[in-house]
Length: 546
Image 1 (spheres, rainbow, N blue to C red):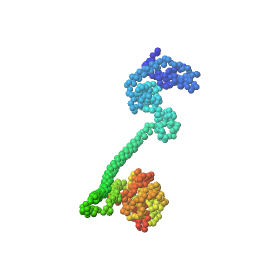
Image 2: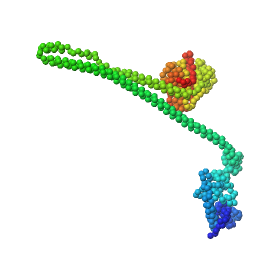
Image 3: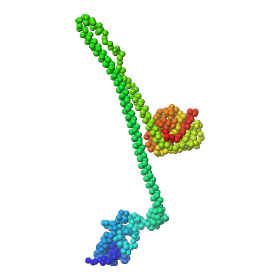
Image 4: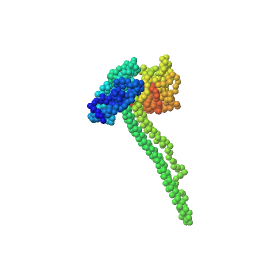
């Protein structure tokens, strides 16, 4: 067997087509050696067949034969290289997370030290050695290790993506700049890299700001949950306290009611017992008299008979029972009077709760002013936008799209699309008025029904009728002392509540409302009625000291 000179370099055993160590080497008639696959592929599809090294032309496709001697020498050379490689491998570090692995290593992959932009392969120090010694491989472009090298190549031209098209914001190769991107401004990747790197600071700052905003929002949500939990705990504690007190009151009134009924029954029973005893005594006396009479009827002693008859002819003293009756006790009104007392206590507790409830909703006070552009032409607004009354005659005003032209109404400048808000309106000295909240798209030009389904949540005083506007209208108890109305809206909960501020009493609440538009407070002073209803509606500041 021939022996290979192990001092020979890899260049002596390299195919000039693939620039790698021979694999199944064959010889051409001109004496040059190639890998069988390389030379076969080189000649496939060609009309003329020539040597890739000396360009000798063959008239017919040569019959290739395996170069046995060279094949044995290549095998021995490969074993020698593998042995040296195995020694070096032990000294080379294995790939760590985040590092580029060698694409040639089998089994345990080693860390790549270079990547070849011609071969599209990353090499460890051992497998890089042919690129440092073989002449053909030395011409390859080596760079610092890169992963996914195939992604760095132009799919169309099979060239390195080393330029950046600023027009289409894509990576291109040199061929792209001549063909598809001929008229586009193109810069080297490094130049675009430096531009984008300069922008990273701004991007990082913006991202950091977004992170901080979201962190603040998270904290805000957490704080809201904590406040809600505290509110819930407080509400439960208050509810337990009030309901426990009511339960004790109910139990007390139940005991008092039972005691009252029992005492009436006991009195009747006592009277009946006394009369029964008296009757029984009379019965006993009469029974004794009857026995004496019967005994006397059997005597034949005339003297004794006549002497005794004198004392028996008159009955023993008794009461006239024809007019005596036991009257059963009357319980009429007993339960009602007990419930009246309970109702009084309940009203006191409700008043306390309403006062506490009003104090809570007053914390959501908003400063609102009336919008003159929405006011009906007959309405007169104060300069500060806090008062409105009916002037009696219509003014010639600019036809604003948002102005009421039929109903004497006016909206505020401010609207609300979330959260909670509260405001108060003085209605003192007025016989008619209208107020509440409406949605933005309310009909302002023609007649309209003030109903929740039409986007209106309002209460109205019309002389002797006080109602929440609905279909049908909800009658509310007339309050002669009503001077100021508080309006509270919880947009997210769908709640609109009205309060008598001075009396600290809840008037009415519309629940389960659906709000899908901004809501506006609405005021309607109604007709002045020859001065009887000329007082203004006044948006008043909230006095929470109450």
